[in-house]
Image 1 (cartoon, rainbow, N blue to C red):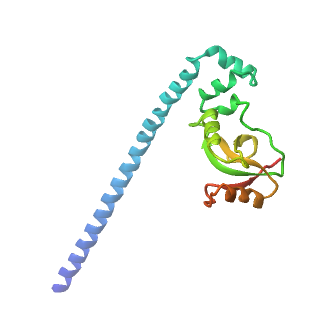
Image 2: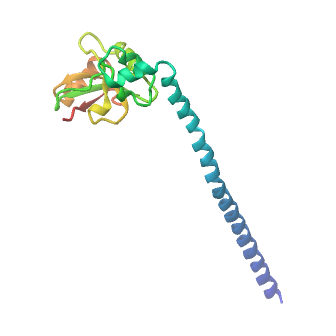
Length: 186
């Protein structure tokens, strides 16, 4: 008779394990059932932010925005490009480089997201970098096929990747994550 009792305990243990697994599965399914509700809330949150961003450019100057769109080379463009941080390429800054000779190399010193950094801020940072031999400029990454939507603070004019790396050495930047060559594609 000791045998049947042992088997019953084995079945009891198996029942407890299966019950615990069923409980865990029920909790996991309940968790995933709540995730879409959280995602809807998270999706709703950025919409007011986007709406407030859209209102900000309209409030400061409706007329200059229209002028900047119709005549991107006007002198009002630099001031306007700071307002629409999400679309800085729509109103180009004349001091941002959008054309370089294909096949040349640039030495990238910094990449700044266009969505949160204005062209003027990128130009101000570029002015503090470099030296007399190597003067950085700001490139619009969208114009060169680089990672989209970045302001690239770079020293242009290198003939090869090795020449671009030499600029890093001249600027005393040994970290190749902070200073690296990129080829200008045509």
